[in-house]
Every structure is written in structure tokens, then in C-alpha cells.
Length: 173
Image 1 (cartoon, rainbow, N blue to C red):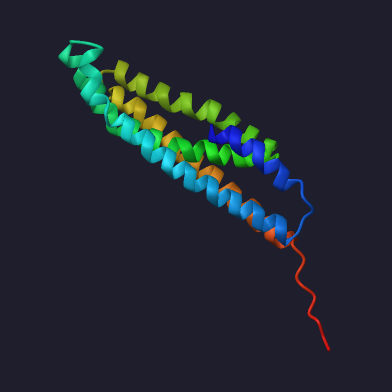
Image 2: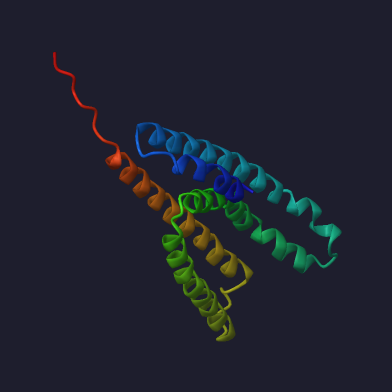
């Protein structure tokens, strides 16, 4: 998993003495993990795109097949983002930003069920537009929020790390 790999490599870099070498190493590692996340996301989304070709092997009910195939684009989006979610979380955990991650998941713990239960309430009230796709749209939104949250936090930590690097002392002759 990208998360566990980042948690393994980043602490060794992060524990080095603050300075330009550490900042550059963190930037390079972050960049490499983001590249791998993109590759992982594209591969995962491609595999999800194969679901319509195999859904008839799991059921013969055309209604079920249609519903499963209808969520494939949403699932592809979710899986495309999953590598970035894992990478961002692993990079933050590797830098021991546990308080931020904890606060984030605390808010997600309440927000995601709130939005999903709203969908359920509307469906039970007879709103025909609420369906299986509606729930997967919530989860896709959750993935977008996590990617954005981790990216903003990593950018903030990177900027903070750059500010901690002392400016070179000019040499005068």
C-alpha cells in the first residue's frame, strides 16, 4: 500500500536535521509518491472499467447488472483518487502530523454519515431521484475532500519546512 510505504520511508527523511537537504528530500519523496499514486489510480480505474464485462458472471438479473454497471463511472473516479488519498495520508503520518489527521477523520466520521442519511431520508420520503448512484456520489465527494485536504496540508507543511531552512549567508570579500 502507498500509505504504508510512505509511512516507512518518510520518517527517515523527516528525522534528519532541518535544512535544505531535508527539504529537498521531502519534496522529491512527495513528488515520487504522487507519481506512483497517479499510476496506481489509472490502473485501478482501468480495472473498474472492466466490471461491465464481468457483471453477468455474478448475476443473471438484468436489473442488478444495469444498476452495477451504472455505478462504474463513479467507482472508477473513487479508485482513481484512492492512490492519492493513501499517499497523502501516508505522507502525513510519516511526518507525524497525527493531530491533523485525527481531527480530519473526526469530522469525516460525522459528515459522511450525515450526507448518506440525508439520501436515505429523501429516498424513504419517495424521492425517486435518490438511488444507488446517490450514495456512491457521496463517497466520491468524500474522496475529493480527502485528496484536497491532504494536498493543502502537505503544501502547508512544505511551505513551513521551506521557511525553517535558514537563508544562506552571503560571503563578502
